Image 1 (spheres, rainbow, N blue to C red):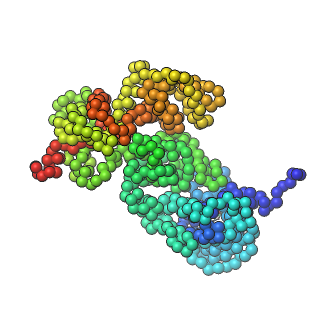
Image 2: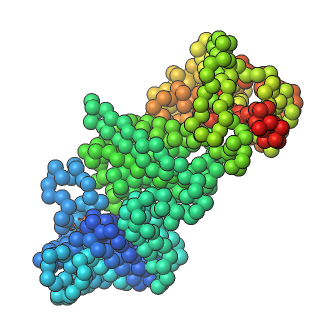
Image 3: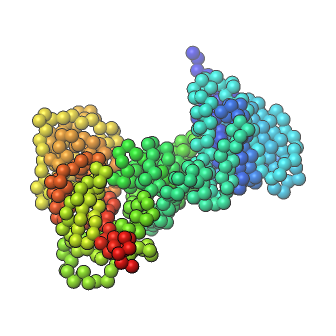
Length: 569
Ligand code: ADP
Ligand code: MG
């Protein structure tokens, strides 16, 4: 075929393909425009899964009549002017592509009125061309109506899922913007019925309630306002949001939402940061609920990496990773454990003072530590693990034990993690790592990303007991592994630590190894095993918390028992 420049209509449709992939992408672009226009109320109406109709109505600044047609020209935007602005984007839109792209693949009508103008504007477009332009009254704001989407692009239509699936995607988009903009009142109407609405009252917790329901909303923890500043790099990150307590975990990652400068983004690294923060708190295969807002100077990010602007690049990805993870971890550690029943909360206490073998015994007479919870009784700082007599196992998860001062419940997995964590550190410090040779060398295949991590750390891996060497294309040969992981657990541990590259790689691998080698919740333990576990826990430096910061045990004192049973006042 001879080479020819494509005609304008084909060019427009190809370009539209990048921005307008499906009905939900139209909704996303229109919502972004309404938000950029400063609207406090946005309603979305859809019919036929968004194919027949999408209508977005807002009360924003509107478009002056003289600019209405220009808004539909390619690369026409009121949001940036020059290259410098491109590095400092504060609006959601900036590419000037959405309206012309939508008009290229659907029939579009717009009614808009800008404050201060005597009359509004009605505009109709077919095949991207304006076919009507007249005056029409309207309160300030804009209504965009998109009909018969993709009717002239049958190939696109074919790729759409069922109507219900498209409605689901649209709902997802609206819900995410509702989470990002709690001060905007959103409503979504599907086939004439209101399916979702928010109050617009400005509180994130209300938006979470609207999106996820009461049970989830009640179990969200506020991220302590977390800020990190570095004058040297100009980095200044603020993390806010709500994250789910570990007891409301989900089976997939769809409940993790990130907003960077209030833009909904997907970013693998951010996802890993949060999952890592929950590591050890959730069962395997479970994922947290989280709504995280990052504020970061626009010069530190690049949002112009994807036509639909859903991806984002950070100038200093590692620093962002570190801050997010720290903020999450701190919030979680401060708020766990979360006892299930109110009454139990007042009964059981987490021993608060860190155990320490070296503290002299007069500490016993030191002032009692005062827990922040006013109703709780203070707990005597413990100087070492008391002698515990195993009474039995509860729910295949907890060891029930009697101590000099009451009842102890010990989380078998967390306790063993602590033991293993310190054992690994000790062995590495003294260069006496127990290594287990594999009967035959095993090939270990890695992803390109994992490859660079492994390449960078292959020497350190040796100090943990891994004997690994490169073996051709993306493959490594493993000859020996840390003895405490054994044949069964080493490869999962290795994969996990290669995927969850954190700023503190050593510590990350140590935690991962401790977790994988520790006895699981759900395992029945014999009396002997339980006694041995407690004995080993006694030998550790910090027996009362696992390496993730979770408590290994909670205690019900004799005094509390007596009080609860009315023996003393
Ligand atoms: P972009 O959002 O990238 O600037 P669009 O094609 O989405 O490009 O929109 C083009 C321009 O039309 C915007 O820059 C804005 O000035 C105007 N516009 C679009 N939608 C609205 C709206 N709902 N309210 C006010 N102005 C709007
Ligand atoms: Mg836009």
